[in-house]
Length: 374
Image 1 (tube, rainbow, N blue to C red):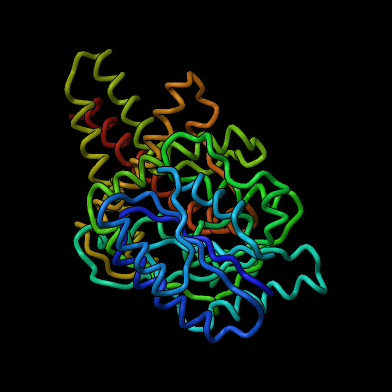
Image 2: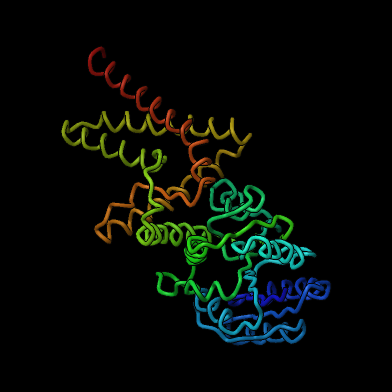
């Protein structure tokens, strides 16, 4: 089983060198077939030269690419010479045995021809700086650990995942015409891959170690929330079968209750409803935090609060693009990419919904007492 390993990158010379070194060792130990590494890079100057030097040192092909992750991945597919393509991000290193583990999973395709994909596990390493302590409380990292949670997946991230090259070409490779230079295209392509009849089996033994360095900044976190929230709109419009009415999410509830109280305040020309709205904010915050502590253990309330703001930003940007398109069909709906997502959503969200109701009932009761008794 021969692998072409495609790595898109830009201005990450030190990280690329660490990755190529770890891959070189794993390639030397892999006796199941031939391997090649394709670095598709859009760097310039010293960064470009440094990456080229690393390629020469660790037996990798250097390929100049456009300033788009999607186009880089597609160029890697076009220039690859082997049957299977393994995509790896440039800010990871690989655990020994990665290639053997993916090969073992893909070899199951001999008895089940639908198994043409293998998705590994990604673990994060490095210093936990301020913004990492925020992001680890969001759902943004969930997909990196899918390999530990389910035997098959309907979609994946673009790291540590292998496919049969002819199937990638058959389905049209990565979509290049989405907004932004990156984000969402891996989800869209891999969903299209499984929708066409292929199976992507998880391989938890195939591990990459992802550096926290590329997540440890406010800009990195905010950019991801904006890109991913925006891209979800376009994906849901393209695949309406994924659009499902969900249990309400916190951001949706907050937006609707805020509009309701603001409308009452304007009609009554009174600030009193806004005071009750502020009280509701505080009550809901305390109830949601208490629920989080009960289900996930003790958590730093400051970092958790910032994480909830980032989650809200994700939803906010999806609503923004919906408004810009004058289309609210996806603004307050969610996506299910398979049974696992439906089960996990209902497992946790049903309990959250009752907290919304309890808090709203409590504030309404307080308003009634204020109106008729005080």
